[in-house]
Amino acid sequence: MKPALADRLSRAVVGCYPRRWKQRYAAELLDVLDQHRARLRTVLSLAGGAMSTHLDPDYRMQLRLMPHLSRDAKLYIAIIAAIIVGVPALVILPMIPRAIRESRWQPSGSDSVGAIAFSRDQRTMVSATGGPPWEATSTLWDVTDQARPRRLSVFEGGSPATISPDGATVATNAFGGRAEAALWNVTRPRHPVRLAVLSAGLSGALWGEAFSPDGRILAAASTTGLVLWNVADPARPRLLRSLAAAPLRSDDPGPVPFGVSQGDLVFSPDGRMLASVSGRDQVTLWNVTRPALATRIATLAGPRDYFAALAFSPGGNLLAGVTYHGSVLVFRVAGPGRPVRVTTRPGILASARFPGGGDAPASPCGPGPGCRVPAAYAAGFTPDGRALTVVIDRPEAWPGMAARDTVFTWQVSGSGALSDLTTIFRDVSDAQPILAPGDRIVADGSLTGGEVHLWTLP
Amino acid sequence: MHGKFDGLGRFADPSLLILTSLSDGPKHGYAIMTDIAAFSGVSMEPGTLYGALSRLERRGWIRPLAAGERRRPYEITAAGQEVLAEQLRSMQQIVRVGRQRTATA
Image 1 (cartoon, chains in turn brown, blue):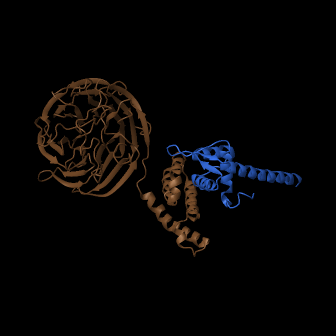
Image 2 (image 1 turned 45 degrees about the vertical axis):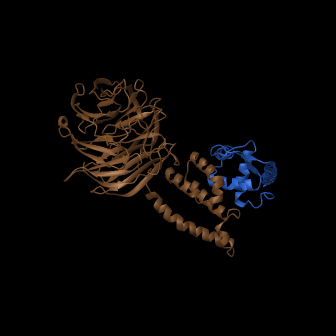
Image 3 (image 1 turned 180 degrees about the vertical axis):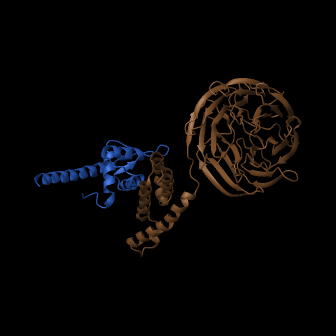
C-alpha cells in the first residue's frame, strides 16, 4: 500500500473511534500519525483499535441498546458492519483525487513573495518579492525537477514579475518602485542582464505584467492605466499603446485596491484579446489584434466584488474569473454577439467579512509585509479546456475558518457551464498561488516567509 | 504472567512495553513508540499504542500530564511502577526456569 493512501486511510479510521474516545485521544493520535510513516499494518492496527474500543464497556454506546445480544453476537455485527463500510471505502477511496504529489519549499529571500511566473515549458520560473521597491528582488529558478528547484540567479526589481513564454526574458517592476517595468535577458540564467526600463508615464503602483503568447508584446498595468510594448527585440522595446483604466462606477470607492500581485492581466491564447481587472466588479476586455490600435471590446461585470484572478480557455472563447469572495464567473468572449456572462458560482467566502470589517479588501493595499491580503487566488483551464481549476489560499486570520489552500476543479462544458466539482485541501496559509501552464503545478509564494512552494496536482 | 495484568489479554505486551518506556521519565505518544522500537525492536503501531495507553490510564498505572499543542506526555504512576516491578519479577522467574530447563535438556 502506498504511504499516502495508508496515511489517508489511517486518518479516516481515527474518525471511526467512539466520539468520547476521540475527544480525549484523537488529537494526540493524529499528532503521532503526522510523524509516523503509515503502512497497511498502521491502518489495520487502528481499525482493530477502533473496533475494540467500540466493544469496550467504557466507550460502548450504541451496542448498549442491544443488551440481549451476546458479546460474540455484537462482535460479529461489528465485523459485518466493518466489511459493509470498509469494502466500498477501499473501492471508492482510490477514486478520490490523490493528495498533492510533491511539495518543497525553497528560500528565495526574506520578504514576501508577490509574484511567480513560469515559462511555457515549465522549466523556468521567476519569483519576485513584494517588499519595499528599493529592496525587492526577483529570483530565477530551474524547476525541471519540481521536487528540487534550483536557484539560478537573483536580480533587482520585484513584483509584479513575469517571464516570456520562451523563458528568455523576464519583466519585473523596475528597481526604484516607480510604475515602470524592467526587461531582463535571462538566456544566460546565472547572469541576467538588464536590457531596458519601460516607462510610459503610468502613475500608481504597477500591479500586473503579461507577455503575449508569442512573446512579442508586453502589457503592464498600474492602478491608473495599461500600456502595451512591442518587445520583439527586448533590447529595444517600443511603446505601442497607452490605455486609460476603465471608467469607474460613480459609487466606486477609488482606485483598484490591488495589493502585492492581486488582480490579473491575461492574454487570450491567440494573443488577440487581453483581459484586465479594471475596477470594482469589472474586467475589461481589450482587442489587441493590432496592439498599436488596441480598443476596448467590453467591460464585463461581476458581482459587487473585486476580481482577483482571470484565465482564458485554451480555445479563447471563455474567460473565467475568480473574485475576492471566491465567486467563479465564466464569460463567453468569442463568437456571435457581445461577451456575456454564462456562469456564476457563488463564492465560498461569500459570507465572510474582510479584515477591517468591510465586504471588500482594505483599500489601498501596497506591497510589503504590512499589507495583509485577505486571501489569494489563481485560476486556469486544463490544456484540453474541459476543466477549470481555481486555487484559493485563505490566511489564518480569516474569521472563523481554518487556513487551508483549496483547489477547486470543475468540468467545463463547451458553453461554459460548470459541473462536477472536486476539491483538494492542503494546509498552506498566507501564500500567493500561481497555476503553471498546463494547470497541474501550483506554485505558492509565501506572503510572510519569503519562500516558494511547489506542488503538483493529481 | 498473571496477577495485576489479568484482564488485559492480548494487550499485556504493549502495556508492559509502555510501562517500561515510561519508567525512566514522561514521554508523549510518538516518543514512546520510538523508545520502544529502540530498546525492544518492537515496532508498535499508533492504534496499538493508544489502545494500550487508554487502558493503562483507566487503570491508573499511567497519568497524562499537561498537553502541549497536540502532544500530551504521560508518566508512570506509583501503582504502575509497582505493577511493572511485579511483572518483571514474574518474567525473571520465567527466564530463570526456562534457562535451567534448556540447560539440562
